[in-house]
Length: 463
View 1 (cartoon, rainbow, N blue to C red):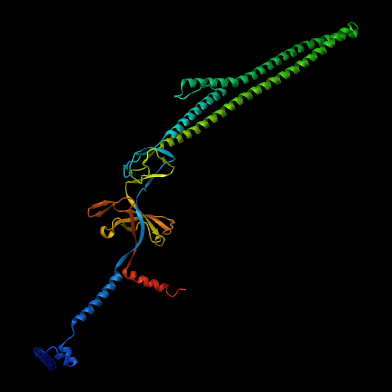
View 2: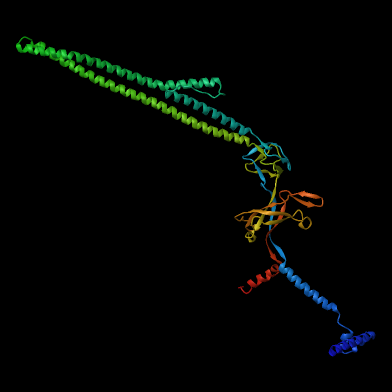
């Protein structure tokens, strides 16, 4: 207890001494002559330096924590331009021609199928007329060949002309069918007549044979009777010789008649075969003519379709709804070349950005990644960026002699306008853009240490 009182007494004395010391005011120069310990008491160190050091240390610690915890985007930049989602449509002529009328001007908005340019249809129209005439002639030939083939095949011969065929032409074709049939049948008729004549000769020879077959048995009986009488001495020898001579002559005549009959039958068979062969040849020719005519109809039909398509292509029409740009034809009567671009139609609808992703960044770009599109026409520091998202990226690199191989990425924009002080401005195709593709995130510390780490990994390996 006494120790505690002692300490309290000492503290009170120290406080009293400090108060007395503070009552004594020293001049500014007097502390300089005091001992160092007393000088520190009379003139203590300013706390500003200590506070500053603590603030700096605290700021450094907070900065390191922020660098370790804070995240920044890893961005791959790709140059490109805004294009319609359906791509720009190029208008070209399918062949050379002369301009007859120009329906549009630069910047006009057109609907799909609207006329753009008319070319001179004279040549294509003449080709279409010729093709139509050739097709009509081929169809007439096919109908005539069909009628002939039907008639030669045993069916009714009926020439069926087209509904628009003139009556005099149909009459001429019917007469031509009749003439062809008559010519074909005339050859067959002559052969059939020859066969009939041969059959008549065969029947005549058969009649002779029948006559001799009837008389020869009678002569045989007479000769047998005469032989019996001659054996008894009652018949004259000359009579018997005459009967034998007569029988031999009639037997010879019968053999000649038989030979004539066989020859006539052979001729009849030959003429019948020739007539049948002639009929088959006529049918074969008719069917061949029909097949050739039908093939000609198909060929001429294709030529007519080609001519009509060529005539149709003399009028160039808009492939889609959109606006006319880069119109390159301004002179009526001017000549256009085949496949030469005459204008482009920029389709309406959603816009996309086609960006060129460099080879060094292509391995990190994937579909679905967010993109910030910066437009050269609208500085992003003033107007901001247009958000978008990667839709697709090409599987193969596109060679380019200026920037090297690159991969083409399609970026869908989330809006088609950009805000300006004067109000929203609609984006149009053709605007140059730089696309910042967010491929990942990393800490600020990793970003700062990255170059040092790269140098550390590469150091000491130089040749």
